[in-house]
Image 1 (tube, rainbow, N blue to C red):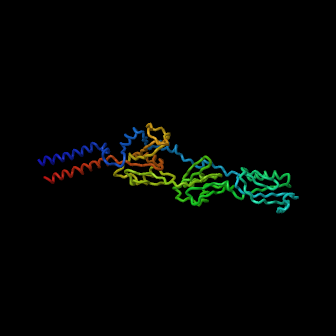
Image 2: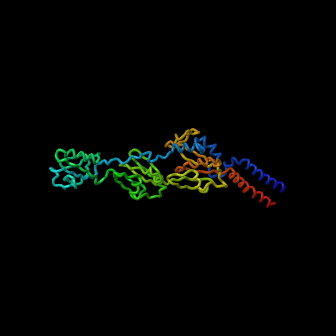
Image 3: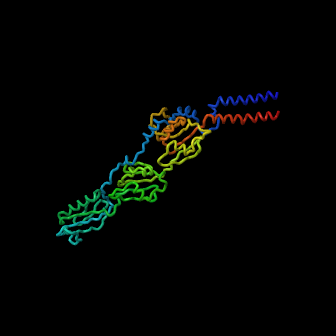
Length: 390
């Protein structure tokens, strides 16, 4: 009788193992797991309107086309510095010369050199352009300077003096520039307003005047605001490409922004954690490397997933989107089948973005091993206990 019961228990244990093998494909439904399997994603995502897109060469090309970086050289052009135009608040110095016999400025300094006719000139004290844009010049009255260049102001004064002075000549100098400059703010050592000069200051000149940035170059993005145009680029990309070191224009606002970009790695990887990366971005291959790669004994190389939200009009989706955020983005799962060598090349150009989630699913054999382990854990003690009690 005891022998029959023992044989029966052994047969039950063997039968359970056979059933485990037969049900291996569906065992993830009741075994503990770190996330969805390849089967879960393929069979459950489409009905929910979640897009499942394989990472291939054409897919990556489409993403690169839609997310092309706006270079400063393309957005702002390469225009040279415009001639300085004065505005209220600027301070001017005005010199007036008169050829002999001087009638208005006879008590001024005598100027002249070898072979040159002597002349006399008067230096008018520095004065700030008032809120109306006016300056006062003796015998010429109020001169409208606002919005004019220095040469235009000289011509206006000279015309006023033409009928009252003897062959007048005028020189106007800008002694203090408070309006034609750029502002530098953000993650810099010293926020400032930097005046521009006729030589033409560039973007890196402004950052140097602000004594540099507070964070590593690879983690800083520079944003330039010019009128209605706003564009951003990683600082190290600007340094590498001299064309992006654009000429500044009056009124530009330069913001240095600290960008702690990160993605989260979960599943069968070497690291399950949030991982930070540089502002210029990294590829999916680089991200997998930083996450410790795929674990040989757990990972399913055909089930490397990247979860993110994309604009609803990014591409023609295979499934009609039924889920969207308040700003019109839809959930997308990108899948990389790393058993396909061509996918490695596509993944080299697939850019990871801030807040992406990378998940590597367990291989089916791992679920089988879990199930067998449970059967053995439950079955063997029962058989051993029974045998010991005989």
